[in-house]
Image (cartoon, rainbow, N blue to C red; front, side, top):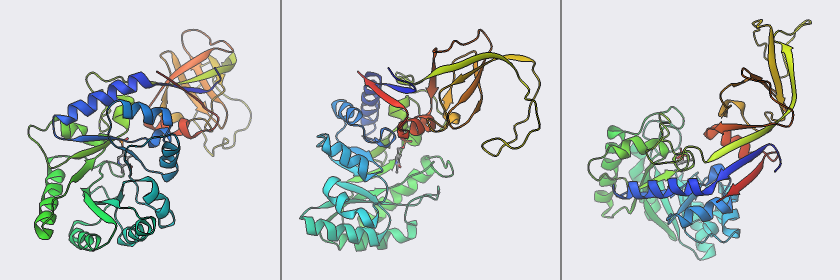
Length: 353
Ligand SMILES: *Cc1c(COP(=O)(O)O)cnc(C)c1O
């Protein structure tokens, strides 16, 4: 196997997907697995379908088209507002999209009409995290204008929290979403099929529910792949937290002084790291750099510390015994680590069952 590489255990991820689908079903909530961190990889998509998902979601049309080419036929939701320049591709490949701009919804309507399709729309509402969403006082106007469009089916409303400012989804903002839902239903005499309540950051709230909430759907990525809820990163009981590993190879190993010598300028990344002289250390270089992975998103095994990283090298120190050239080091990753390694063309991806 080549290095660096990602090892992705699909069987472990499937366990997590099933667990979350079952657990949330008891609260009346459908899980829509989000495939963006795997760039819509067909193996992951197929595994999620097999695990019981009846809809998938992705933020990028390229990933969705990739899943369609691979023969994924269940409905797919685009979870970033479509670009005006991509509406034709969106109506062809997605049953539903999350939306905030009337101009774009009108363009979707036009594209859908041209293609002879219907396109489902969920209007996102701003609940305080200040990323996507129409302001609550604008919602009624946006709904009215959306309902007037042909070839557009208003599926419901939704919200996203925790992404920009880490605003927690909880009783209070979810109650505001419920109130907005009721206002829309009463004002227009309609029933909203979908209340798309949030992401893996909503699980603490969802698991604490003792009765049904208005939320009918959560869009889950991180919790399925890492087995954790996204606010405190605590493991979910029964879920696998070790499905994904990054492997890198040692290319130099030496006892070296811990303090540099010679006149110092800023380093290759414009930093001047402080130095503490710790005498001789067991230093090794891994063939793993910032072109492969964001070093802040990976955790080395016990006994090994990451001390520096540049484009192509990672400098580590080992406290127990010196590493050997050719030795493989296995890292745990978080979402940031996985996102960067998945999108690096230098990292080989191995999916196994
Ligand atoms: C990425 C994304 C999600 C999934 O987030 P996770 O934290 O991975 O569960 C949900 N909703 C939107 C709008 C997203 O962009």
